[in-house]
Every structure is written in structure tokens, then in C-alpha cells.
Length: 152
Image (cartoon, rainbow, N blue to C red; front, top):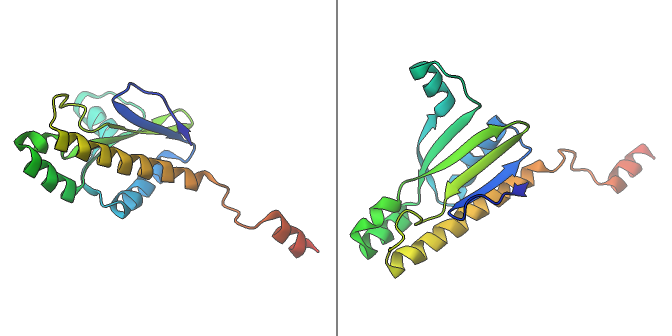
């Protein structure tokens, strides 16, 4: 797992876990962190069917955190602009990149309440992304000592 240094308004990681597996893991991890997936847009399929151009695998998950959305709307009528938001998953050679805009990067003059909620959403999203690193470990869960004992 590599945390990449994208523009300052993006949180992004690269993983050696394959594209499909990363997408599947996000479908599991996001709900564990109280994010709900509202939809998926398969960019490469849509672009190929609509304009005949093929691209690398690229899927955008449309996600939100319901309680934070409620708090955002209580804090500021423009709070709904930060939810839902998009999480991009794309194949980049041998690695898969996962990225999301920091919240509320599109509302620079956001109220203190909205900024606090944005920081919490960013913290939760960083946690989801970092947990993808767990799946990069070798699948053999036996320790070296265990393997030596089995071999005798």
C-alpha cells in the first residue's frame, strides 16, 4: 500500500491488490465504516458503449455517510453539497488507485460545523483506504516457526 501525494484536496492510495478485488473489498469495508454505496458508475464500460473509446478499468462509487449528511444539513443548508460524494477506483498498470476528494473541498467558505464534519468524513475515509493494505499481506498465514514444525 502506498499513500500517494495527489493534489492537496484529494486522499489517495495505491495498492497491489487487483482491481476487481479492491473494488470488492471496498464494497465490504465502506459499510463497516458506516458509509453507504448509493451507486456505481463503470466509466470504461460507459465510455466504450457511448463513444466507442476503451479505457483502463475505472469505477466510481457514489457514497455517503447518512448521519453526517443529517448533521451537515442541520449545520448549513449548503451541507447537502458534500453528500453524496465520489470514490474513484482505477487500474493504473499493475496497481489499483483509490481516490476521493477531501470533504468539503468544494465548499471553501464552509461553516465551522461543515468543516468539522468534513474532517470526520476524511478521517473515516482514510481509515477505509488504509485498511485495504491489510489485504496486501501474503495469503499464507502460517508463521515461519509453524512451517518448520510441520516439516519436522
